[in-house]
Amino acid sequence: MKVLGEKSLSSKVEIGLKILFLIIVIIDIITVGVTAGSMFFQFNSFSVRENYTLRIVLETTIGLVFSLTGIVALYIIYQFIKIFRNLKVNKLFEKDNAKYLSKISLMSIVIGILYLICFIGVSIFFKYFNSMDFLSNFLLKTLILVFAVAFLIFGIGIKILNYIYLKAIEYKEENDFTI
Image (tube, rainbow, N blue to C red):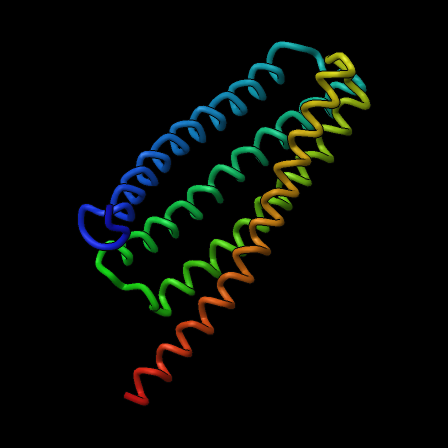
């Protein structure tokens, strides 16, 4: 199977990314709707007690941070779609691809930071409103922390790969000029 060009692996990956983009849009819309609906319901159905306001703020913040990670993930996927679109038309060593990789790197680090914020919010939430058993609490916080670290490492890794890619473009341009 060919990797570049029409009807290649890169064109199939582009289609898969477009489907993933659509799925994340739907999940984001649902998350924002559920967060907004939950916040509205809680403000209108209960009297506000001393710690209840904190609970509403924490739940809303956690929901919004998760939604933001989805929006940033959409941006990352869109950048990957542009890269694979270039690969489909055999544009390998283009500065545009390096620009897309740079944006992906930055946005991956942003997602890592958003997950760290979410981790702090969930930790505070469980400190004051321990509604889960110890194991579930531990697993949820561990999962969020793993996502944070994974995206931070992914962002740094893409940054390094982008530097190597830029060097490859530079060498290609030098080679093109010498021939």
